[in-house]
Picture 1 (spheres, one colour):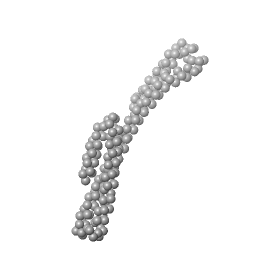
Picture 2 (tube, helix red, strand yellow):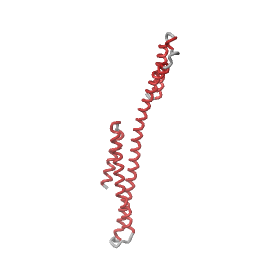
Picture 3 (tube, one colour):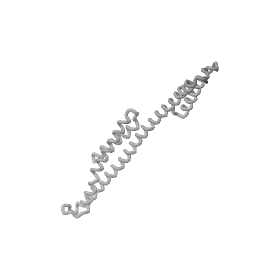
Picture 4 (cartoon, helix red, strand yellow):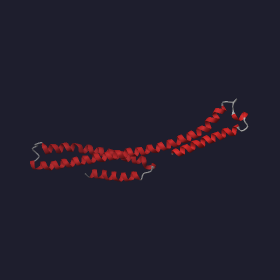
Length: 173
């Protein structure tokens, strides 16, 4: 019972720590959640066979067990089942916390990916337009139009500003 109390106390402390966590400690917390899940699994594996032992001591007519002791084994069986149920509920809560931690990490990665994709799209415009004109020597705008060079630069700037504004409005930047 003391092991279960210790695991439950660690879980409660860990639950509070998750709420105050920042990105630097997230990996350590996920590892700690995993270790707590593993400890609970070991505890459940240790408690599991006790149910069958207590049931046999309670119901089977074993010569070494006095009939007056059978109700006591019923109480022990009930306590062991209660411990099993508490372990199962703690494992479910830990599994939920583990999944929530992973989802928070994925959300942060998604936000970073959106920012990178936005900046990549903005940078692609000044790379693509001069690249297209760079391979076409006959129809370059600045050769036949006096302000062609400034027109291309202005178009690039307008498209980049438009993309920046749209990504900012969408919450990607």
